Length: 390
Image (cartoon, rainbow, N blue to C red):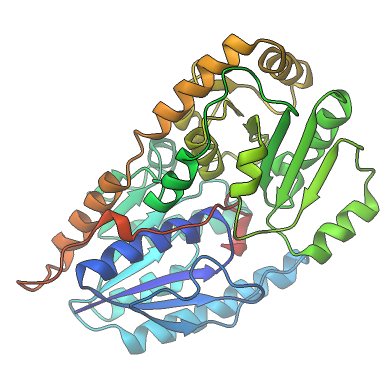
């Protein structure tokens, strides 16, 4: 018996990172795994997975909304036929995010079980979101939601569903623990944000924030190719205290330099459903600033590990950053609390929940090797990107 995992775009965003963690746990436990995904550019988190058979998809994201929707419809047909050929009764089809709906439909046609791992709620356009939710509620045997916000917002009428919070890999935690906790706000004071190159992720707000606080340094890591970053900077005035970076497989140097990690996504346009970069910042003992709504608000504890402030509230952001910059005792208290908070998102718990879910649908044969949380590996990512991209 096998697991067929499906994810559309293999990049360095949050949802493929979490899928990588799940597949590592399942492969270590002894499951046979097929993976359907598209890697149109640089290798992503789903590249070179040991113990996983890769089936490449022809799919890419386009700046043109109509071309993106056309690509999305075509890849649904491709996914449907590939899963139809691969799946058998008793298999489990693991659909990562709402987007690979064709995989769920094909699984049902073949009598396979369907597990959805849900990361997103802010899908556009709205009719497509409703269609994808309708497919999920009619095909899913089990839902895994990355936060309580995702579960309660989607409210899909599926009997078996649970919240499985994302976790950090032991390898990431070990590297983060090498960073000593400062007892005063560090110098230089670097404010870090990592996100997709989309306005609704708060990129213009981050530019304005950097411009308003010349006494601080700012770093923006974008989940985009170097050429896209260069094109963006050519069209926008970049403040002298702001450095831009393209997508990277190694975010550790950025976290080492950072004093604060922020997420400025606009709550009325893109509600963050978890926020892996925020959890990673907490593991480094960095206070955070996040929106006051969504799953990312479940990761942060307001006024304890950081602040919950709307990214469009420039005055509120300035006040919080100046407090952390100038008040060493406040910074030290939040830094220590941040690292303790990150420890509650344990990889062992994540592995336990994933194995329990798949073990119920696809029991392992007696004598299969148990999973070890130490096999979960990751690099740091930018948050989950827009619509038909993931």
